Image 1 (tube, rainbow, N blue to C red):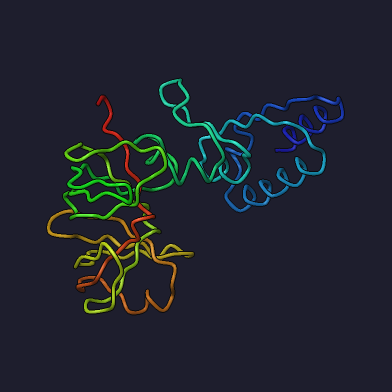
Image 2: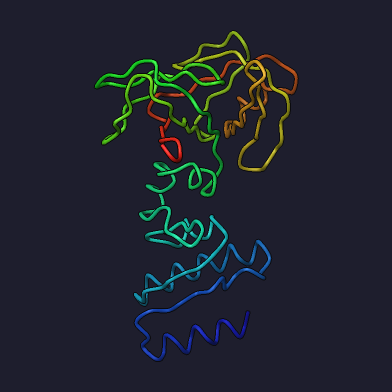
Length: 225
C-alpha cells in the first residue's frame, strides 16, 4: 500500500491531469479500505484531480464515483451518476451487478398514463409509470424490486399498496439491516429491513405481510425483445 501511496503522490506532484486507479484497494482489508475510500474522496475534492477508477467493488464505485460505468462483456452497459444507475438500471445485468435485486418476468395486464399493473410469479404489482417508458398491455417485461424497498410486518398488520401474505423462511442479521428470505406460494424474495423495532417482531417460520410502493418498482424490457 505504501508503494501505491507514493505512486499517487508522484502523479499529483507532477501535475497530472488524469490519474488512473487500477483496483488500488483490492488487497487491503475491509476496515482499512473503508478509511482509504474516505481519504481518496477528500483528496480528490481538495486537489481537484480527475480520476479514472477501475474496481470490482460496487461499494467503492458508488462511494467514489461522480459517474460510474458498468461494463458487460467489454461494453458499457450503464453510464451515469451512481444513484441514477442504481435506482434506474437499464438492464437485468446492471440491476443484479449494482447492488441486490429481486427480478421477476411478468406480463402487463393494464397500462395507462398513471401506471401499470403487472402479473408476475410473485403476484400482481401496481407500478408507477417511469418517464419515457413505452410498455403496453400484453407486453412481457422484467419487474425489479430492490430488497431494501420492501416493508415487512407480522400477519394482520396494516399494509400499504402491493400487499401480499408471505412466510418468512430465513433471517440473517447483517449489522445495518436484517435480510429475510420470504416466500409467496413457492416463489421467494429477498427483503432487507433496517428498523430494529420491526425486526424484533419478525421471526423465521412466521406468517407476515409484505408490501412495496408502486414508485419503488422498476420495469425493464426482456433481453432480445
